Figure 1 (cartoon, rainbow, N blue to C red):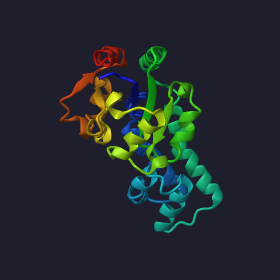
Figure 2: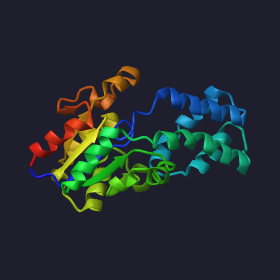
Figure 3: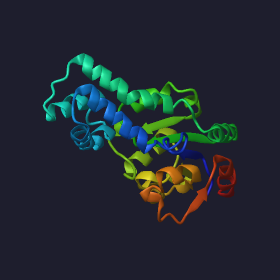
Figure 4: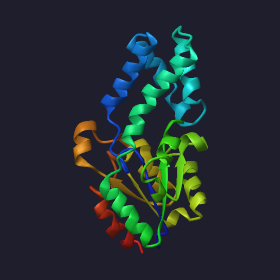
Length: 232
């Protein structure tokens, strides 16, 4: 098989894994700002995560509706402030890509490969990503909130293939293994590679989807080239 494109995940792959403690801290700050008990807010917020990832609701609408379920009618100013609490850490997190990932993508693009991105993400992520320092290295970015399908749904993988005009069988997929993404990539015919970063696993644990993975594994993007060219 000849590789025509590299498809990459975002969180845990191009950038470091999203820390669980940061998610907890964000929800705590939002609850405090809204004057709601943290546990109550966290439970109500968690029930809408899939709606956000599938783009069913905007961040603003989600905040308004979640607070409504706990008896709070937020002002437009409160909604704006809570949006900033939620998106601020994302903006900071997406500013710093793994340096070896940047180098690898530059090398592969110089060699003629296209690069696509597939990410399960809420509606605040795409614009933040596209304004980031390295977004020009991505030829096509597909987010679950924009296509209404989340990994491992085959539609999100076929969407990036269509955007790049490539066949899935000619793509190498790299991800940290969350959301059963490696299994989903394999299902559509891609060659999946698990990016296993030991320091992040030690802190956050092995993603459920990667626990039983028996396929290709790398510990850094510097090891990716040999897998790509081995397929050619």
